[in-house]
Length: 140
Image (cartoon, rainbow, N blue to C red):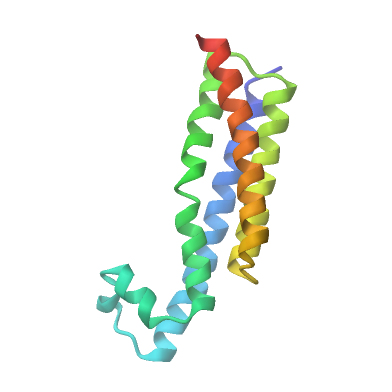
C-alpha cells in the first residue's frame, strides 16, 4: 500500500483543525465585541475563559484538544509512512481516528455531553493505540 494512504487522514485532520480555528475565531471575536472585552484581556486565555460564556469556550477548548492527543497520531502516522509499513489496518485505524476526532469536536463544540465525548475520545484512543503498537512491532 502506498504511503499516501496513511498521509491522507493526517492531512484531513489538519484541515479539520483549520475548520475549528475558523469556528473559534468566528465565535470568540464577536462574543468579545458583544461583551466589550478588550483584546488585551485575551493575553491570558485562562482569564478570558472566565469572561466568555460556556458556548464560546466549548469551541476554543476543542481547538486546544486538537493539539493534544492528535500530536501522537501525526507522529505515528508519519512514522508508519516513513518506515514503509502502511497497510489496510493502519489506514483503517487512521481514518477511524480522524472520524472519531471530528465527531468529538462536533459534540464538544455544540451540545458538550461529556459521556458521549468521552466515548468518542476512548474509541479514538483505541484506534491510535492499535496503530502505535503495530508500528512499534514493525520497528522493533
